[in-house]
Length: 130
Image (tube, rainbow, N blue to C red; front, side, top):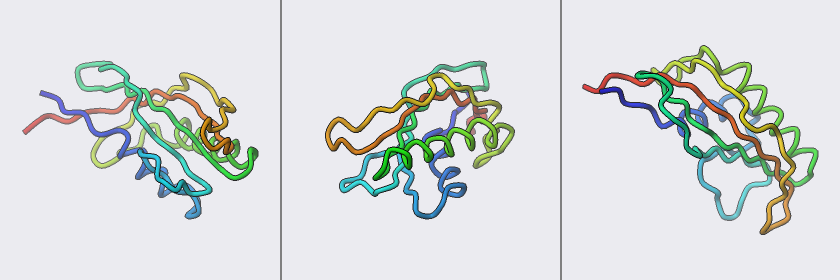
């Protein structure tokens, strides 16, 4: 049996180490929300091969100003698409990252705070169960 990792947790940890310290990254929306916040949530996905999971990941980036939310999403986009493939996160190889839905300006419907969003697919290797 192959067990796949919690891709949300892997990505949150990885982004925290690569984004400025002023940015909060998590998989749950805190209340109150920080001024600069990246939400990483799995929106599904499929097993790609016997040993590879293709997790569909939603990214949402909030900031005080629209241009800041945009730029934060662009940073995450670059880091995940071009810096993450080939890395080993907590013993799990990330084979590739595909853009499923490009950046969209989608202000928060509750607070009207600037928010930019996108969808990615992250291909990660599982491990054999003990």
